[in-house]
Image (cartoon, rainbow, N blue to C red):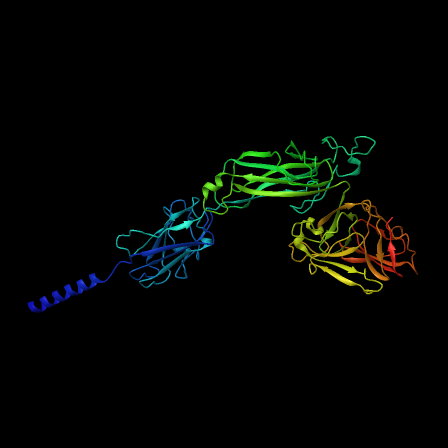
Length: 542
């Protein structure tokens, strides 16, 4: 009996030694971190954390803990799917309250040793990177199977500096309501209306001295310095914003006003008519502290002493940028710059053509100073002044200029199929504005307006306007700022045989045609028309 007991005791010791020899620790090793979506300072990133373990982790029982470095913003709670383990979602209710930037959660599914284990904190988890960039960031990882629960530090990972980018934005909406932001219109040398033009003497010379008491003397606009892409806390507390005149007619002056402070820039002693030059700088802001985000707007005004071409450049300088990221290509003390080119004319009028969602039949009531394409990369096209250019589906024109020999039937031109298509006075155009893609808008609803600039008549020495028409249907414009009957506009054509016949207009609010009886249709500025002619001829607008 004693022998049997001894054998059983010996067997128990062997079994106990066997159990003790089995690993009971899921020790963590080889921890690496990959931050993507955004690895920039102060932005939310996706964290991929991988490591090896030396024993199995039981789903729904064992836990993983991840401690993020100081400066990282860790949410207090997580939703289901914010964290995954080897592709399996962690339930939000199985994440412990965050303590000291440490996130502890139950493993959602069994994980067999030796790993690797991949823990992903998705972008939706909202882990915000430290706002102090560096190459020495690490996390610490441990599991509930570790003997001593000592977290294991990861290899270093990098958080890059996130320098915000900045931009200068001009908005001429105070002068031209509804104009496209950043569109620079042509300028009239003295005021917006002919009645605003003062004369120095009977010789009709324009006064070249700024006079604030004269209405319409200045072109008013908003000038803004703002964050374009927001990154981490900005490094600069002493931004200097300064500007210079870089081109203008010789000996002429551009007057700039910013919040009531006036600057006059002159290209004195230049021999070329137009040239680039260094001029005395004007400082708009010295010691501007950057915030995140930032938007500083000036009420600004412009006046030019003479017609011609002018260019004005503005800069924002922040010397501290280079110190934050000395190895970054973008580490330039000039954090924003922009040049504005102004075309200044002696005569210029402006008109806003109303547009509606879906189809519009329009024409230019003014003679354009040039015949630019409909839209250009440098924002000088006719439609580039339109505030909702993305909503313009197409522009159509029925070209009869080849009659009577080349193309007597006419051809359709369509933008943007033809990106170089132009818009000219004397012609009418269909403009299609999207309506079903804009929430809350239906066809016939107002859709902003299109500003155009030009002159009432061609500028000398050009001859007065003349627009050829062909036998049959023509899309004709109405080049006038004064409403008149069709018979008055087509004064040199009789009604009927040998002259003009039906004239159709288009009422965009109801998307419907209307037909004119002889000499009974009122033609208004901005409207386009379909008109029939018995034979070829020429419209001579009165």
